[in-house]
Length: 257
Picture (cartoon, rainbow, N blue to C red):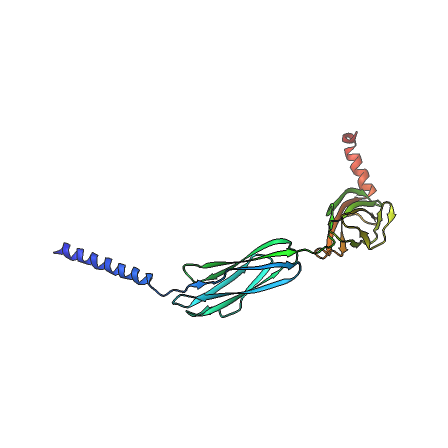
């Protein structure tokens, strides 16, 4: 008799478990649906902004909650409707793509996190063909120059090659307190003009009078490059006094021989 009761109890527990699982399987759930999850902006000009609103529906039978909207770099996205969407209702997500700095075929992704158990993270995609108009384009052969050890009273001499990788004439200027600039041994008159596809070697002379210890200066190159209107180059060195140099020489003279 006890065994029969125990068997019936097990069957009852098993039946309750089946009912619980069945009820959870058929419980009301939200369901996010994007009729369109891709937008092609086509051919656009570099530097312009393009926007689009993705529409989504809640095709479930429970309230849908949008938890977060993320994008890859280069575009922004924001929910422009209510955070919660009732069954049968719709919402919108606005995406803005800024083409500045991009060229050619571009693809960006937007991720929408919600409480939809089947699709907790929906993915949207935008594409564009960015047309780059003719422009100047600055580049340097180096962005850092280390002069090494210098003696007080020396002049730090550095060189940098300025390149125009664009299709239009580059106009560039720079300055550094107390420094002089030359090209081909002649003083530079700024703005320095560099034809498309050409380059110029710029000489930099920086007197170090009254300077001892670490030298760390920065050159700012300003140009008509629409994407990199200002770039920098750092110049480093270390200045020792004549007494310090003499002491070092005396200390290591046997090694130097």
